[in-house]
Length: 451
Image 1 (cartoon, helix red, strand yellow):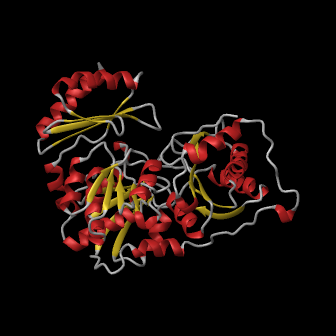
Image 2 (tube, rainbow, N blue to C red; image 1 turned 120 degrees about the vertical axis):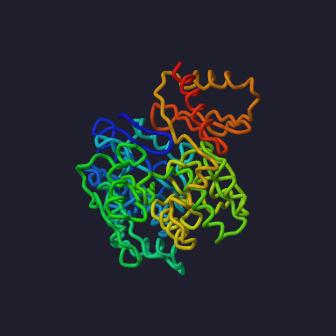
């Protein structure tokens, strides 16, 4: 049996690597390895997801585990219900932004704590690869029990808490769900908010007629960008398929780099929790550090990846953590990431200041211009990193090793790291208020990497 275990989850091709027998045995191994007694199970809109979630559910029930099925939902809903219900674990069937012939399983433990290779995936994988025959219930009384989560009211109430007491301004907002799972949540929020939503590719569709929703890809941004202009909207929001990532566009239809949103959301949440700790990823840092320290907070770097952020959020009791890849983590959401709370905090900040998203961010972009993430396919990532490090070492930069290769100079810095999920080397460059220097250094690094 192929076991496609990745750094943070399980993900692979349908049906060669991920299929219903795999899901059933994964559920049995979860019970055997972790001793779970109750598990929340949800799935996204992909064609194979309901069957895979059904196999997980059956495997758990046959192993004597109680199951709380959520049905079709976003990943953060599994996080929420795992923490709220007191369940021992949560399993979400999704391949997020991978191609249509992929699927996978995301997992959290009790309290929605991060599942990692050490505390979950390694022992589960070891059992999956073994010849072990798992015990199954011999009678109906020994089977687990279904406790369906039949509505979203508790989850929606938690989202609305984020804007409680705020004088929200009337706005026109484009929502681009990409035929993923975000649309139904917007429909439930709509009647509680003073916004006019323009909905495009809104309904979940297992056939993904408009391709996989992944606004990190430039070719996936045109529809939302154009809709903002056509409708004269104040901003646009887009999500990936399981909506744990949230992306924004300003009123001019320009895509907003997630890096700058981290500082904006941090500033908003530090008003509610003065002096709090904010986590940021090490790819792009200067703007976030500047905003957080100016707002009286404490900025700390965290290794990229949701398992690392979830763990460090708890260790530091951090108010908020943000990755430039559009994952946003909240202390008051079981330290987990939410693609809904992020945009709600943004509109709260815009309502409070009365300034547009474009105006809010233009000053920050000018102060700390960045390249955005540039991806390179290379044969040997470590050899490339060593070559780049050797080239710049003679300039005596500050070396950053928390995640990949980071080097900081007086007026510019870069981070070069290998992807945890794809065969890519990712480059990010930023400067201090110098767009020309930024362009020069990007080209310089590109030549070194592609040499």
